[in-house]
Image (tube, rainbow, N blue to C red; front, side, top):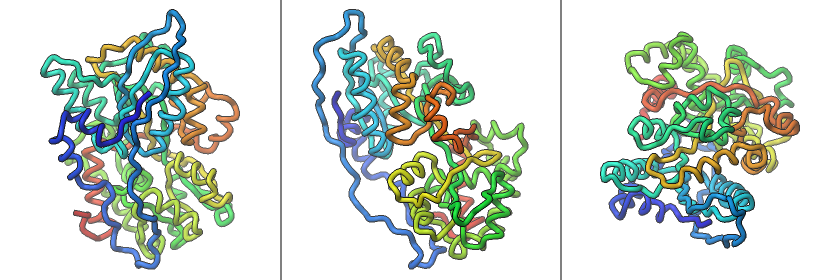
Length: 419
């Protein structure tokens, strides 16, 4: 196994210096915080440079079963360094023990800033009737887009039998153009020392916020999915049930009039939010505010909050639950480019990935949900996630999310959106 850095990733994905320049000059995903908070109350994070993965060659075993598939697999993955470590230190070494003569090159893109470069690489190869060199790609909505463009192959249980053990709605999310191998969702975190009877429905959460001034907050929706999915859940109050799938998969700006009930609700909550309307600038600052005891309740990501509890960065009194109707969650999907020459090897690898042993590694290493249905996991895993291992909803489509983010500043924070 070899790991390349993000700079190498950009050259591999984009084909040269033009792609590198474009990516390096793109705006950061972390914009300045809203200005509605007093400076003294601002949760802080120590600034540090992003860790740059280096190329790490791993010795390849020489002995291999006679019938084992073989091949060099170029695996493109983006995310935070915990995802890099999951692949580099756990999943790929575990598979080497199963298939010693299958070798991987892990091309890692920190924070997944270069998905467009990979998509362009696949599109250019298709246009040139060439091979892109991308064998397996972890990406978000790009997989569905790539499938529609003929760049990503649809995978079924015929090729990967264990797909029959994946929740059907999760698999259908990308119409079979991606294999879901891990997941997480937004849940409600509360300090049980202060909240003896936690709310379990959205209406009860809203009533609790109004009755407990200053004890709840969330981040602006453009600063992280925990606040984004809280906003989405409230906006969905005014959307008829039969329209929800449209909001999750398509786009029509005219339908945003259905958000008015939700915007009014969020406006009414504003004076009851921590510090008279202070929204921390990200998922982690929300957890830090909860950890300091400044608030007693907040929407948080399941994996991040479980990791914080494990590291004792949250007090043990903090508990997690999923409400009804649930907050949104999402799976991470792996797609096979149509031009890959290693498909049989990939089918076998993906089928292995959807077995309890590697799924257990995901649970243990990153506190992620398994890609498999919970019933296929060990009882102790099911017990660990008992309060949060519920069905989750799906977020809005990217175009609706972009409008939601902009409108939130106007309608809730009362400030211009960040430039």
